[in-house]
Image (cartoon, rainbow, N blue to C red; front, side, top):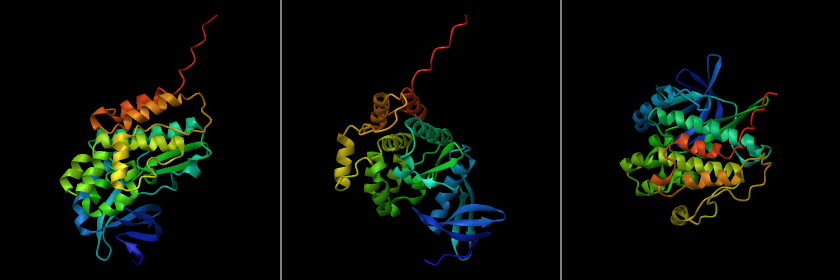
Length: 286
């Protein structure tokens, strides 16, 4: 596919990568840069509802959607905030202490909580949808592509299968396997986001992808249904974090039964925070 020079009022600078729906471009409009993706006609209607919701959710760790439009040559497009950051990966995590990792996780969960409070769900929480940006001593973790699982739907099953199943809740995998639009929409829930967040937390602290050695989808589903996921093989500066408590929180979040997981993201956050050391008692006045 030839890279367009312009899309709508945006001047395309270069391709940043590819997402569920195709290429993602860096584009300029005035003196600002944006991330721009093209949409085919059948996705425009579902994208409109999702982009409106996410565009209205204000959280510093959620990358927001800005403009949904149409170009005579390129077709539909969606612009989002552009941030100079990199997808979270083991090499980026290698130098982070355990407390920094926990702070990143809590910030991301805060963004997810805000999305849920507005009636949405992410549907595709995974490492490639988490960006890390360092500004001086501050490390920001940013959540991208909120709601695109709604938009992509059953016709993008093969691409989702390759990239997202290891982090996906078993009931959502089963919905995608069935391939029915209504079933997929019903399975993209707060509970499914809690599960995916639990898998992500385990990976952030262990440096290992869960279920990476699953032979196929059936084997992956069997392991998700029968295995008790915990944080194992951790080799970090623990900074007094209680890894047992952290592991218990992950195990609860990744329960194969949606009704047995923490009911909300705040409940998961509270469970993770219990891994932190209790504050030292205030010194008594002499």
